[in-house]
Image 1 (cartoon, helix red, strand yellow):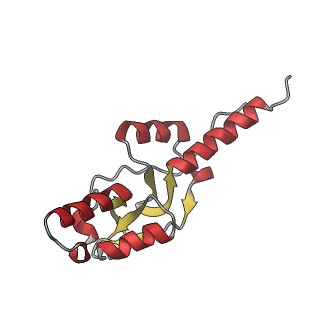
Image 2 (image 1 turned 135 degrees about the vertical axis):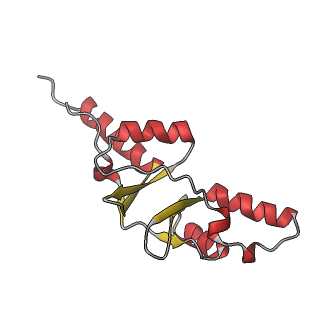
Length: 142
């Protein structure tokens, strides 16, 4: 029985992104309205420059509220996580899953030849691992 799949088999293609110069409130609305855990942040040329997680957003809003600031004035570039852990379409989901656990990050931009081709989330990985487990459990005995 072959091992669990690659990122290519479970990633979301054409993921929603946000530009680094976007307003934080716009980013939060995109995350909430689309039921996402975060967004990949790109520059004007479409290159990946960071990720914006729900926790990044919560941290920014709380910081603003505690300091009598206005979250309406914050930009994505000011609150995003700049250290991007990405993966490639051919990477194994087990390795990507372990990396997510190690870094406590729930999503990975999928980059091929320097371009964003998708995004894989912990939910995508979990689904793929369960599908593999089901195939293995229900595989005919030889």
